[in-house]
Amino acid sequence: MTDPAVERDAAEAASAFAHPPVGPDASAAYGDHPDQVIDFYAPRGDATGPGSAPLVVVLHGGAWRAPYDRQHVTPFVDLLARRGFAVANVEYRRGGSLPRQGGDGPVAGRWPDTFDDVAAAMDALPALAATALPAADFRRTVVTGHSAGGQLALWAAARHVLPAGSPWRLPAPPPLRGVVALAPIADFAVAEELGVCGGASAQLLGGPEHWEARLPCADPAALLPTGIATTVVHGREDIVVPPAVAESYVAAAAKAGEMVGLTLVEGVGHFPLIDPAADACAVVAEEISQLAW
Image 1 (tube, rainbow, N blue to C red):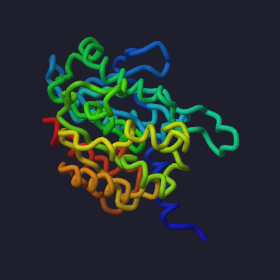
Image 2 (tube, rainbow, N blue to C red):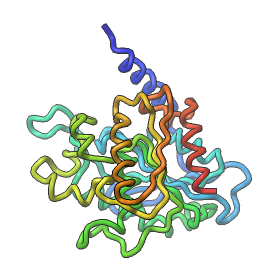
Image 3 (cartoon, rainbow, N blue to C red):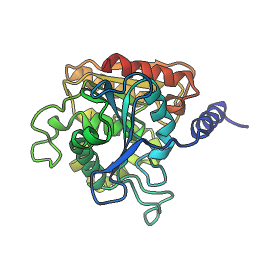
Image 4 (tube, rainbow, N blue to C red):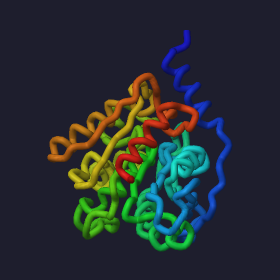
């Protein structure tokens, strides 16, 4: 007997991945590795003059694993560009294509490479986009990301509260209008308890032996408060990253004295948030608009 929730999730994933990739208007490298690249999408419509459009930085998901790159999120990126945003689609190094010895799937993330890349991309973005995406208004920058990319988006906005001595720590908050995290893996402890993505959070940190030491440098729930406007959008029926993960992050923020918005989208799971054909994607675009415009 099939599980209706699993069937729905499979159908939603098939819809989200059915769209053909959308090529960028320009690309620029922020490092020497092939994955250290940012694709730029100019705003469609009237907002094409210099500094005329808010900038949305997108960090794709895929459990920090190599088989999932930025291409699958380009239809969502294109939707944002058609809504008048200037968009930067960031690639970063992910886990290996083969499982570790005794593993059952591609490993999630590389330590410290994944975090090195996100930090370097965010730091290089203003200079790169000034040439490749002149319509972007850096005073109106919003970072968004889906699933594992949602974790990275929250992390990118929290670098100023990283532990002292962290190589990624910023001396001051990054100049962002805010963060819109989409079904993010935002609380590693809860994610591991629920078996999210086959223990991907622990793999990202390098394995259980590194959990305690590295958690304070990577877990969004440990990097609070940030002082940056943050909204989480989550499908109420999500079985990939259950809403309990987002709810725990929001509760941790409240305990730290910070209010984080939580929008639970009824009747949908994980993938409609980045599917241009889904109503949930319009909800995401509106949340970004409310911060950016």
